[in-house]
Image (cartoon, rainbow, N blue to C red; front, side, top):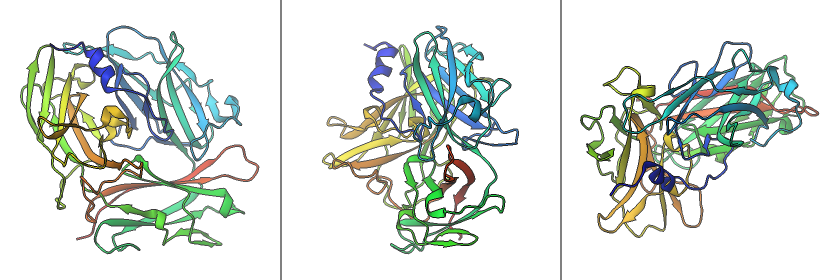
Length: 418
């Protein structure tokens, strides 16, 4: 007998581990949170001061029941701690940073009922005045509780940031790692007198906060800038190309799927059984992103249905750690709802997720029981040829200032030259 959908979803979603640099969905009834910059899919959530940049935020509330949702804006420090030193009138150019979300629409002819919410920021009611890190908090006005936390960045033109990757690392050569080198050159209009303490950088691989390296020490400080050339902190496991599946119709399975079937009252999709990767095989993917799509309808936002997707991985049952499902749809969260559980009957590690029709990237990350850093080596493998996306943020924390300015940003795809 099928359990009610609310019961199943709640069993999939447990406690939230706070990680300020990643999206956090705090309500089990909210799914498919997406943040797009200037209408671009798989984009980085930042806006540049003095431009028409905007972020479009959308999500689904899993019912047709109306809830009065609002959002507020909060400033953060360069390392994602709340910045309580700024007044609202200082970091906001318009408004008070507390606005209602008025654009919502109920799903149409779906087996799983939901209400699709969307809004843009900045807008005519609210805009930011200072660069730096921020978070946008969606909350329920009636229940007086936070529902979603979305970190985003505000950039100013204060420096030039150039970077390159190499598979000739200080650990190995064309083997399992990629090493990042970058240079930061402040503009003449931004004189930095104490670079050792006033400049901070943060680096991420494939937009994953769990991969973030905070404030690696520069190797050289010159009159024209700072250079990072042989930092051991900037050697990244190369990983492997993400796995993917396409679930764009309820009529039949797509790429990476075994089947999609109706078991009253919901649709269920079974993916092909995955295995640990022993070799590198190139596959065009989107570094963990997902894209909502329904080829049978014109408006996926409100007409795409939800499906219970069953993941299965063939791996030894006696691993000395945990395997986690990972992709942008997991919000880089490693709670029990994303842990692969070994099934002695099927002899597979299994996990089930409620996902909206679309195209999805995913991978498996391993975490030893000792609590070491998450690893790609055990299941995904590490191969120097892997095409990874790297993002570098540079901040200026001027002595005496009450906020940290985001002065440069580099976001690029690394591809091994053939």
